[in-house]
Image 1: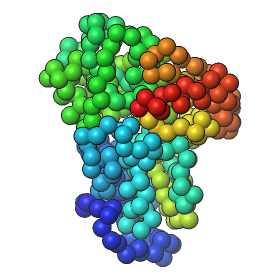
Image 2 (image 1 turned 180 degrees about the horizontal axis):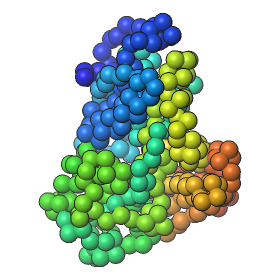
Image 3 (image 1 turned 120 degrees about the vertical axis):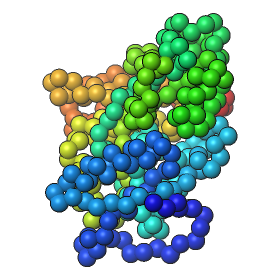
Image 4 (image 1 turned 30 degrees about the horizontal axis):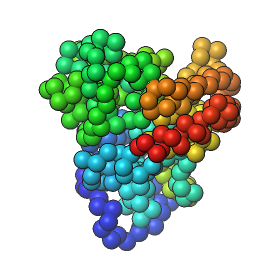
Length: 332
């Protein structure tokens, strides 16, 4: 396993083709414990293919990793954790990169392809406190560690007295801030806690109705070069095992794309598969002060996923989402 510096000059190697199919697939990933755990999930899935797909891991440092002390909203609207990985793809340092789908910009560059979404863990958010208490039981004016506009806007709707403090770092660093009293609580994704074995008595899951998840939360996403036919074949076969996950992800991402918003906007989108195999998509746009909450819900067939996302986005626009998002952008 090596570390890739995206600013180091490299010589591009040829795009893999059928002649070098014997070479291990090079998987690019960030170097955090969570990113490596997610990459291990993908490696295990590839190893179970027939025949098994051999892989090696290349660690890539993102902009978000290089400046861990700055609020995400101050860095960029999109691509904070993905641009360096995409650069590694472009220079053929890696063959595919593994993302948390929620970190992906709503629209990918033309030379990139989201080829697979191999499974979703718990999409909900968690309140982490030293005592494992609920959101409603937090003391008045408690301090919550989160820099997410989506989370702040929704929690203020229920608890306008809460104070919010931007907090950066890996999952364990942020979790420790709550357990040691640096803040009263932090908000973390349940999927990350589960993948790291940290879903314990300190974590209280927030219902979907209280805090609608970020688009793609809990879902893994594999990105490749759009022109790479071999990788498209390898991961396309893997993707067929998770067609419902892919449909949900594409519906959620379509909401962001049609609103022209990035992953740091106060937008939430969550799709689920109902017992009749239809797709239910929920979206919301919220004011940062918790005074405005716009919602839209639509249901349809799996093959309508992206169309449902467009319809939800248009309904949110009709309710005034553009003005709400513009005000939020000025405040972040």
